[in-house]
Length: 580
Image 1: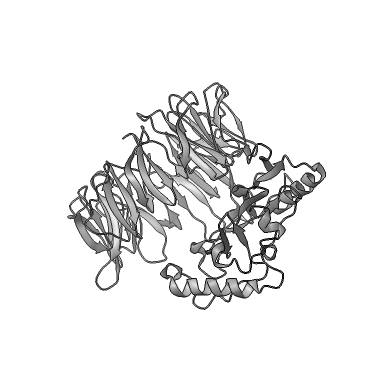
Image 2: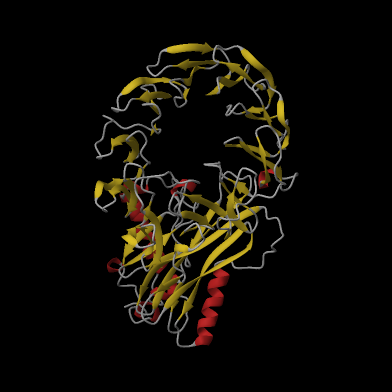
């Protein structure tokens, strides 16, 4: 539904930009030119940026493929995922395993692996289990071959022909591109190479310091956390508890920014974002950021919610109300657009791409909108669904549906009131600091005759939790009388639909290996008001995460054709006749 975009788009040969529209069949993606004209009509379930090689990854019917700028598939949509190309190669997931392909789709790896990273300097980290079942790391070359076989307990990307690997407990090494050992480090931990230095721990659980490439201790262990050096600076933490004390040091260990902050981020081009905890007693809630330079000079107050890395003297930043560009003084660039809402802005030589409140739009540099996603979705000549936005708080955002076109306006008003309630549109104070982040959105799942089936989905994440919790529900609305149907309304009054449906799903689980991910014995049947949705020919029954399967399984869903249960469907009932 929304784009997971990089902060700043690369200058690329293509001048096509991915855009989305809401339709009767969900959100569809296509491409526009820099004038806002549709060049590739929205038809994909998702579409990524075109890369420097003139190729873009798209998704359709749950599979990923690659198209060129003429909208021809260079790689057919047959993979579970495809990464972006690096050094002319991409990683694909095929039947649960990673492989490497070239720009023509040729598979280069003779077998699949548990994981393959992106290429850097002609090498890609991969890992898999050896014959004894131990997970080990190695490196592939650009032909897909194992130039360095599985033998490390961990491995990093190559930088300037060097990479740090873990050989065994308390032993790390720096290797060259062919796996030759350049130096052995007999320490509990050694981090990535940065500016000729490496973070290290002498013993497990001990403090961090820095060594040079020869293994000589340059900064004695004294930090509880230490990141790689960049531009002669490194972010370190001195906290002994959950309250962070991040600071910035030089290569001699001198503090350039004192270790007293909730967060410090190196932004490139000599710039730093320094974060103070919004709530010092709950640092996991997040930070307000000030901009400083790498010499420790603070340029702004603590006013930003997030700041991107700098590129060509500009960064994206947002506060509680707006998103905009800032320059290297840390202040907003008033000659460039400022947009209401939170997110990121990026720019190439033609357009500004704005990913604001989970909606992608494009503007020219004067602020004129070239493209934005539609907020009116026609169902028919008579009925429409209007997208409304509710954002009372920086941590609370809901896009919710409102019906338009019903003959009885009083009924329409009641329908829309209920849709707002179901969408969690409620009174939230603008200045209240929530302990969670909440987002809600909707799709049109099905429409025929008088029946509209909407998908309301949301995601609630409590700050500091391992992950958030998604929920979804499907209002089934009769657009003539305004009635919201329940599962029982589909069946004859005296039919034992709970047992019939429960038994059908039980047989599916028993006879289909695709349900092997379910918790053993967790499925006990459905409830009378089991969550469901319909399309023209099928009933779908679904369960919430953790209910009968692991969180990663999402919402386990079972498809039951109406043809299998016609004997219990009330074909003369209002629900059935609303769409048949």
